[in-house]
Length: 338
Image (cartoon, rainbow, N blue to C red; front, side, top):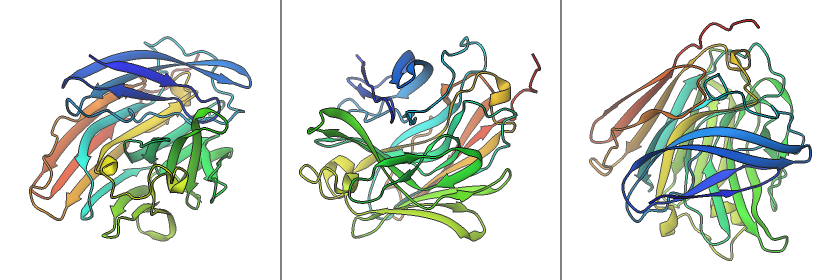
């Protein structure tokens, strides 16, 4: 029995929360309606959810949407049999503790032929359960294009900021949603962000999530081999202290595990011309200091979500302390002219 509820947020994200009763793998087709200052935007999304365990509430599927109020994406999705979005690969549910490191890297794909109306987020992420008034709880450094959420006002409110980008940029990010009881906004978006840097096709972008012995998280994203382009977010308290009446430490049991996967979260893709012009090889590596401390999940799905624009494969290997998952997104079919 799987219950899916939708939380609507006009300027931040749409996210999903799934209550789990039995171990299953389910394929869902969902139509999400988002209200913007311009009207109604219908987004057709496909999500495959791999269930962790019988008593575990799945915090979020991971394809959470961030739009500015001025987002000018497609007003209606194209037919589902056509190229209409990105794809996600994964996912696993693993423990969290000092000595366990989550690491990913991928090569920057080629820019799409057309960039009108698009917003891209490409990332390796981990995300946690919420607690109290803390809801969405995602570590999501990302490669971006279009009009993405890529900045923050910083402390104490961590208000999100958007910028227009016609070439690739990347930056570290901790994205949060909270229940603001004063305004009665049940999913108010906030973000802590690192420095923003430009990058280009072919460069290798890496992401690293590391928890210190003092239970402080460091979220790092950079260009492999270039120490001058490294973006960092450090968080010593969940939700950056915005819900300190409910939660104050990453050591609390609600954060003792996380979900991990990678996504090409692409909006405004109407056809192949609005899709990245090349594919990408994505490495996801999980390591632990203690042999056999993690029971490795060997059933990763290359099509956790699929926008029907290209093909992907996934392979897995591991030993007692390291798991490597390779998600290979193939070059898209040759663009056809109308």
